[in-house]
Length: 372
Ligand code: MTE
Ligand code: MO
Image: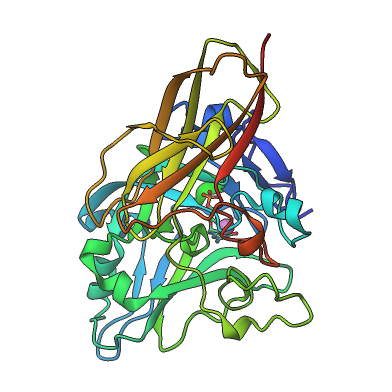
């Protein structure tokens, strides 16, 4: 059993698949803290978790022509200037279960919890690439990452990001060896993972073994034949994965974590809580909440850390305390966020449905009963 050596997990996690391990925190725990505690940070593994010996670990960085290839130990990586940033990581499949309700899709049934936030510490990718002699001369090039996890044929997990993002100090791409002040837990990439702020989770390659600069995107299945968006009209007979770009920056997202669908709330006052985040460093500027399915709206209070313009890498938590309108037996609670590009979420799922169930960011709706 290739999974026999997987780590022990926190019992509060809602498991979507055991082998490989995929799990999300329940909504009420997800927004209990601004920084998600490591044991309940959502986990998305495609393969068994490798057991990497930190002493013999080496990160291989392929050098530029005229530069030098690097074989970096953990100690070597610690010698680069250390950066710490708070970054929210979201899987492209977050909220896929709502797409399934429209029409069947292929993928794990994530609810609203395939998103979490941590303080990551590590070396900047641009500093490591510079030491290997790379410069931003080939503007169309890509930085390809390979994990140390592999399938029975020996194929490793892989992904890539544009060299322009990797070399941009303002993009703050990290080779992280710390998560919330601790060495990375095994499920989250021990000893080193990539953290690409503002970009889909799939590019944050865990158990990083190899970094190279290539003229083309990674040839990995997960770069080329997955994690792409399509029209609702495209099905598995007609899909052409080469016709769509790989997902990098994610669109604006928000969800309600309290109360939960089907719950009964007290009459009088209700507190509604949730999270909001946008990709590409775009800051969430507002969250609107409705109690009547979207007819009328109120503005929620944004909590958590204020984000820097163009570097809003982390989510905002939000809440709204409101009186329950007298005589209401039920509430149709809805939330939607706006980012600083004034991008908004679509109101329904059907027009953004796609066969892989990715990019599911319609208004989030929760139906609750009011106690008599
Ligand atoms: N890296 C490796 N090596 N193997 C993987 O299966 N999954 C990716 C990414 N990096 C993956 C990986 C996907 S799709 C996501 S969403 C994130 O890791 C999840 O990171 P987490 O498990 O730390 O939350
Ligand atoms: Mo993912």
